[in-house]
Length: 144
Image (tube, rainbow, N blue to C red):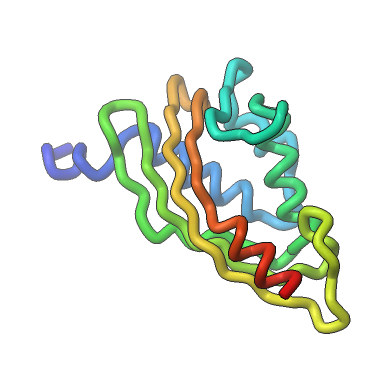
């Protein structure tokens, strides 16, 4: 592997690409998705008590249930050091089943939001996550 290749890839990048593939698979395999997280996983930006792996898996399950056609487009996946991956994504889908409790319109509404996440991966497992996403835009799109 050349120095240039190392700058663009690390074990975290490979693990995160596989994680998103599993997160967007339908039907969602919850056990497979959970296998990507370390037992001591921490979501540093959770605004609720579900800062652990089960909370993260629950969020991805809610996404799959509320918008079965939803998927992430990984715009950029960048290595940072030996154990981090930085991901800029677009998340697209249609609210056909009360996504996050939001009403489903007679003509279901499509959404397209962006987000960025930073993951730490050790021994092939996600141990930490920081994230920002366009939740306000999602809510406005689905309720406005």
